[in-house]
Image (cartoon, rainbow, N blue to C red; front, top):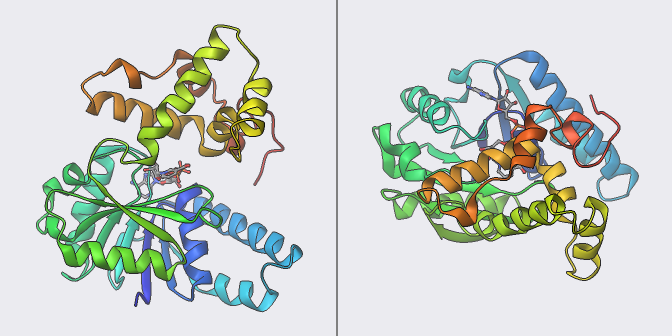
Length: 286
Ligand SMILES: NC(=O)c1ccc[n+]([C@@H]2O[C@H](COP(=O)([O-])OP(=O)(O)OC[C@H]3O[C@@H](n4cnc5c(N)ncnc54)[C@H](O)[C@@H]3O)[C@@H](O)[C@H]2O)c1
């Protein structure tokens, strides 16, 4: 059983994983580079808890207790007592490798080191590590509170014990798991590339509008969200980084080529819900 979970990065995913873990009675140390980011993350958790209580899904006692289990920190060394550390910083191999290099020195040899990367190779993230056998991918989905699946990604040198502990941890957080090979995009993000790519091409060719494409995919496809709604939820920057990473790792395979619309939107700061503007307009949060 996991008692202490460390999380690196208090963005969309880090805060979501912290929330899910705290509700499962796990003590969480949530690390990010500054107090402002951590404060904003805790505000988002509080707002989501409040909604849960209003909808009758959670009690106020549950949320108060869970909130008290999330401990914000700005020193990486404060993660040293974690049974497992899940990294959820930006999708950049160099940054992730560097963080783990420091973290490995600070944690016990039994600590599992997991990355929530959407597309990067777990083998590459662990390549500079002294103990690559304790590295694994734990790919949660957005929003973590509602999405059931966690992909457990096995790097070239991930040990069977590490894989099992990651599976157990995900289950403890109430999730369903699937074990995936360490291949670009794993299962879900690989399947999802044409979902976004073809929708962007349809838009670019003026075949249909953003709203029409989303509506058709929801109504006729039975999807919970259309491709543009989903890109706004994920974040255009995150989605572009994942597409670029998969494209590069498949040696420029044209099927995974990013679209210029994505790039232009990122350059103009239209990052989706978190920016108040993406393919749709939103009321800006915190
Ligand atoms: N957004 C999604 O839908 C989604 C879904 C599954 C997986 N992911 C993956 O999860 C990871 C995080 O994505 P996100 O959407 O939460 O990103 P985000 O931009 O919302 O948050 C990233 C956080 O990392 C922090 N950070 C950056 N560099 C750091 C450093 N050196 N040390 C500590 N913190 C640092 C930032 O301050 C920020 O709070 C990425 O690898 C992404 O591919 C994202």
